[in-house]
Image (cartoon, rainbow, N blue to C red):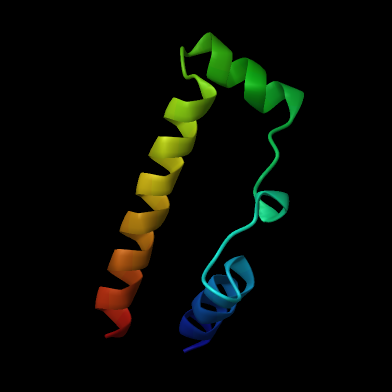
Length: 66
């Protein structure tokens, strides 16, 4: 029960009106950037993969709740 409430709260905080501004996005630390660089991930590639993971998580969450 609490897990579902926390998930809904987290979803609401992530995108209040369904859009996400660049200001609200995660800003990687220098360490994050160095790990991405060392593993060959460019900024666009990493962002695309993170978006795919977020979409899949939302899809699974909707299926679980729904």
